[in-house]
Image 1 (cartoon, one colour):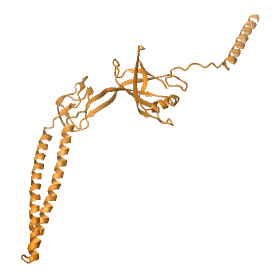
Image 2 (spheres, rainbow, N blue to C red; image 1 turned 90 degrees about the horizontal axis):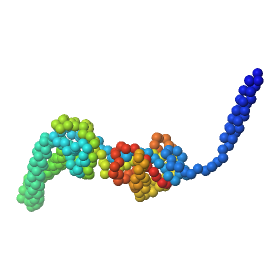
Image 3 (cartoon, rainbow, N blue to C red; image 1 turned 120 degrees about the vertical axis):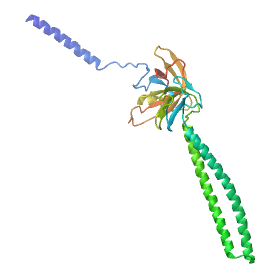
Image 4 (cartoon, one colour; image 1 turned 60 degrees about the vertical axis):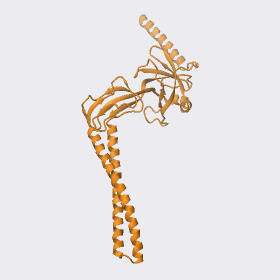
Length: 300
């Protein structure tokens, strides 16, 4: 019995200590802590914020075939940079080139015909005017004047039809040239060749993937803010000019850089995921690998 009483006394002591601890913890002493870098939480008072993002090429171009034919040449070598203006792949367009030659010949013949028709129209009009004068002087009959007027109208209709056919031929030539251009897709700036989907002499149809190209002339990192962080950085993000920041690598090495804000997406109602995101665009950093996850430090 004495042993049980001792156990009860000890348990009562622990219970009293526990109640005292809970009462003390319910009203902690408020001590203001220094602002620390924030990832996704509140950063209303932060002097520095650290966000994670993927180091990516500025843009990705998935090239699709727009014409049918056989791949007769591949200039885009995977892992290399394609020079500006160089066709990615060349699809056989010999039939289109023959059509272009034929339509060009047709256009030349129509233009020659137009010159003859306009010259004849001028001569017939002069003759018609002379017939009107002769009729007025009583030297010819009205029927001759009417026949000449009908001839003028006929030549005028021929000129109009000729102009219509010239316009149609020009449109056909423009369409053929466009298809020839599409059989040799090229860009006006250099692009890195990430992947080719077709081999030499394969047949392609419109809509099939040809190649994936990357614009590595610039880099970007997509960053996402929490609402409180966005409010803290809103004025900085909306300001024009460049935004200074620091890239932190896995080994702790830091790289200072400057970039600009693009595609700032703001949804005040926060109805969508990533409502407060943007792209940070800047010159490529030597030593960083595309697709590498890095941390970015920003100051408000």
